[in-house]
Image 1 (cartoon, rainbow, N blue to C red):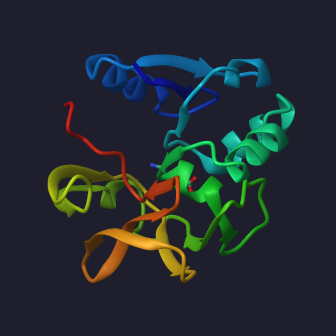
Image 2: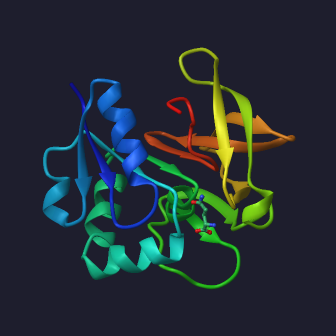
Length: 176
Ligand code: GLN
């Protein structure tokens, strides 16, 4: 059974843990560096990326998590999680992990009221159709040559992968 952590500083971490448990995986909230011990991977949920970034610094998690990911620790970031993974965020400076060769533009689809749900074909295990929820989602505007596109929406990549670093502009909504 894979042991997966869910970064639980702020945002939608509870839904991710529920999904993992439903899938038969071991799931643990990560709030301090010691929580990372013995894990096989981690999910960075959506939320407010500025807040999560600040808390990563406050709980001394930013540096250890970054080093671990650079060392090959698998990570999946959704929404704010994708922002934290990206190397560059358009606009104001904020604390990020910066491990994914990409640039994101925050809140690129408009305000909360412009949030929407759709179904996407995702290149995982062949091709899988999954519900995707865009909640004040970021948009990937640039990415490097080692980054592979796993899903496209309105002609632009919305889910990408660079080795064991996976990022999507949306949380997969399959469990609702
Ligand atoms: N708007 C948030 C941010 O910029 C991300 C939204 C989300 O995670 N659903 O950090």
